[in-house]
Length: 310
Image 1 (cartoon, one colour):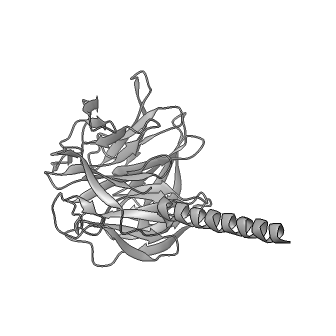
Image 2: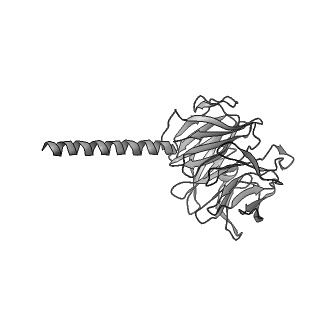
Image 3: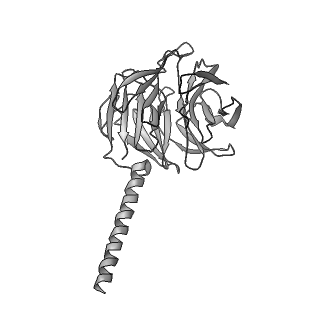
């Protein structure tokens, strides 16, 4: 009987430890909130100020949109940063590049030559071959891919999200007035497309039938037309950059809004998430395993920032 009790106690303890481990793991995947997460700077005085992607090896890629002049950005590059902070030019000879993404074969995609009339979705293979996969009317901005490597593109000037196949076939995946101003775009775990609106700070969900519904509006963050920069989905949470208020927000799929990081001061200061500062946070993404979030900054003298989630 004594041995039975000891064995039972041991089993209960193991189950308890397992449950706690699962809870902590879920929290660190972005479904919980840990104020002990820290912001660190990977590269300072960094000109990459737009969309961010991470490849399978953990290298970070950032579009250099630059500043708006005439009909588009004056940036020309996509920059590559290793985990150790080594900075190289990944692509050159672009025109105001915006959203970017990788597929599961290692091909890279970027929105290029946006001139407020149209923009090109460019595919770059691992050997460096460039192909204009599609030209989208309006102002195509952010992009994301599904498991079949179809590309979905938000649009700042058109109330649409377009879908592009690998053969270059372009269709309208969804249309709704709330999509005008869309930039940040990502899939959630259920296969819904989540779009953040730069102009209104709305976050909407698009189901597989193309129906659009509002998840949340982040209040009081739109200043001079600058609301949400980009978004990324980690676990069951949406992380959105408040570009004009220098904060990063965490929004549940049920619409609960919290400040995740940033004091609101326009500065590059590392530290605990609620004590650190950002200078116009804009691009945002997570790595493949949801271990870290990466943020680019639009503030002119910005940096590439990292927040470890576990």
